Each structure stands twice: as structure tokens, then as C-alpha cells.
Length: 355
Ligand code: V47
Image 1 (spheres, helix red, strand yellow):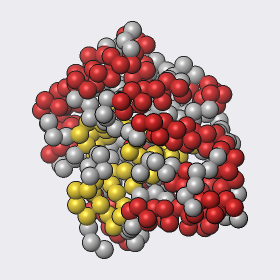
Image 2: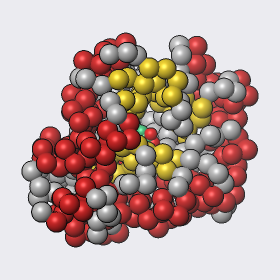
Image 3: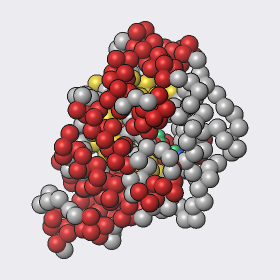
Image 4: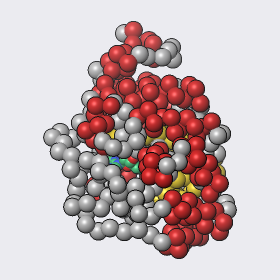
């Protein structure tokens, strides 16, 4: 088949050709993706030792898929003080975490200093910890709330010690679906513009895609191809992370959930299409650890990290509330036939465990 030949010749696929990949059977697709994965990383599977911190759930936006923000589905509002955030980061650091991944809701009452001051305090006390913080949705929110340009917010982040940006807030780029899911939040063009500006500052980031709700396969392909196009220009994305939609406690009425087969096909297709983004992350918290381990044979080379605590996706049913024990994580990767490699936040290898 021409499509398979094109993939094997490592030629780029168009939107329509990429949509047709979904029609291939799972194992053919898996083999194609695995070949590319093995070419690049052999049997290595990356993870890091990290701590998620979600400092506030008070949000000016209402995204239908969100179970985390304080609303009538979740009446428990909270905002952490800088001291609380610093204490969490310090404890995590003392327990071996090399990265804090900080994502907040869009709190209209806290002031920009509350966001930036937290990063600064962490960096001052723990200069070697990597701060991955502020989704493009938060950057857009702060820019609108405080009348600052994106450039000004991004520069403030760098001055305050943010090292890299996480991939959140991308959801699905298709404007119609996006309007239904999260009207009022950062637009697709703006999400991409913010990452472009971040990359132009010599900084790196990730990109996510929230899938398995109301989007079509064509919407997913369009999302991935828009990322491929930006990456051609900047080269600043480290990893692409397809986030499997979690259904609990939110306002989105989804009738049909994804099958494991559809999730694995999506990882494989991401690997095939994104010839310019090195890492495909099967984020175990939303894929489930079992499926994430299988995804290693369908193009994924990264399983994210130990997480320790997480509030956004676990509020919607993900398994990440209390993270995963590092030794258990390592054994699971080993027992699934892969080589666990601890990486830092920018994918430099730290250590690995023999099979
Ligand atoms: O942007 C919200 C998602 C994201 C749900 O960059 C949901 O390394 C599933 O971006 N079901 C935040 N997902 C988390 C995120 C992330 C996670 C892990 C690694 C990285 C990285 C980034 O969580 C949001 C949104 O897309 N989310 N609600 C839900 N019901």
C-alpha cells in the first residue's frame, strides 16, 4: 500500500493521508511507529523524578472538561501561600525530585506577583531544581488580566526562574470544537504564538492534546500537523503528550469513550507524523499505567514521571493523585521489556537500569 511505503520512506503525510492511517489495523500501525521509535531510542524508555504542584483552583475560565477548578461541581476553593508552595517544593527536592511542574487555575484575585513570586522563592532556595511552569493558557490569562503583552509575561517568567513551559492548555486546536470546550480561554493561534515566542527566547517546552471527548480523528490530525508546522520553524518542543480525556466530575457530556485500540493508534500516528518532535509521551496518569506500558511498543518513548501529587487530572478520575513509587515504576518498565532511563527535564540522560 502506498501509504505504508510513504511511512517507510519517512516521507511526510498530508492531513488526508494521516487520517487514513487510522484505517490501518492496529498492529501494522504499531510496527510502523515502533520501527521509528527503535531507530531513535532502541528499547530506552524515559521518565523523570518530578513533583506536580497545583497552587490554586480558583479560575476565571470555565472549561467543560475541567473537574479541577472550583465550581458547583467542586465547591472547595483553595489558594496556597508562597510558604506552602515553597515547603512542598523543598520536601520534594529533599526526596529526590529534580523538577517541579507547576500549573495553576486562572485566579483573578491573586495578582501576577503571586504567580511570579512563587517561582522566584523556589529558585532562590533551590537553584538546581528545574521549574517547569505556566501553560500558555496561564500566560494568556495573565496578559489579559494585567494588560501585559505576551513578551512581557514571558520575560517576567524567565526573570523569576521558570526554566521550561509545560504543554497544557492546548486541548484541541480546531476552533469550532475549542469554542464549545473552553470558550474564552487562550485561542489556538495564541497558544502557538506564545510557544513560538518562548522558543525564540532559546527556551524549550512541551505540547499536549486532549483527546477522547467530542473531537474527530480529523481534529486530532489537524492538531498534530499544526504543531509539526511550528516545530519546523522553532525546534523548541521536546515532547508531544496526547492526554486521554478523563470523564468524572465535569460538565462535558461524552457518550462514547475511547477504546484502548484508538488510544494506541493515536500514539502511533503521533510518532509517525511528528518527525521533528523527539519524544512521544504516554502520560501514564491519563492513559493508565497498563496502557502506557503497552504504548512503549506503539511509538511512545517517555512515560512522564513519578508525579508524587497531582490535582487537575485526578479530579476527573486519573490515577495521579498520589503519583507512583519510583522503584515500582522502574520495575514495571523493566518487566515490560524496556530499559528505564531517568532523564532530566530537557531529556539529558541521568542514569539507567540494566535489564
Ligand atoms: O491543559 C484537564 C488537561 C492539562 C482534564 O508538559 C484533562 O510535561 C484529561 O498539561 N481529562 C494540564 N485531561 C496537564 C498538562 C500536562 C500533564 C503532564 C505533563 C505535561 C508536560 C503537561 O490537563 C490541561 C488539560 O488539557 N485536563 N481536565 C480531563 N478531564
